[in-house]
Length: 97
Image 1 (cartoon, rainbow, N blue to C red):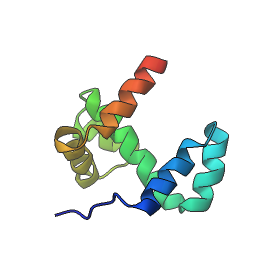
Image 2 (image 1 turned 60 degrees about the vertical axis):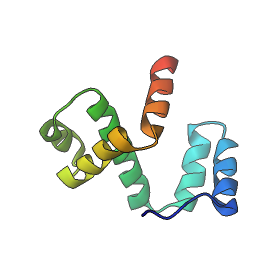
Image 3 (image 1 turned 30 degrees about the vertical axis):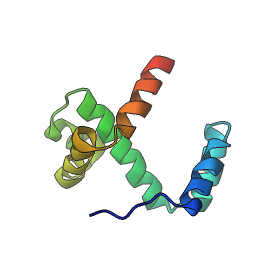
Image 4 (image 1 turned 90 degrees about the horizontal axis):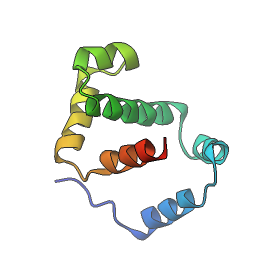
């Protein structure tokens, strides 16, 4: 069973993120809060989610993103059985574009 992440510290972090006004402010904050590898991993998973949503194959996704099949599988599991967080954000980005 996964650990419950709902707690006051995480709430405060999310409230802080919601105060960011643009991409440059996001870079400023996340470069301080995360390692480069953490940021690259998160962005890779987000890219994989978008490609899975577009029905790309694991091979296509791996070639384009460099993600391992294990990472692609984990993201696919989140898309299929998760909390619909990827879908929420991807849909909003689609609507914005």
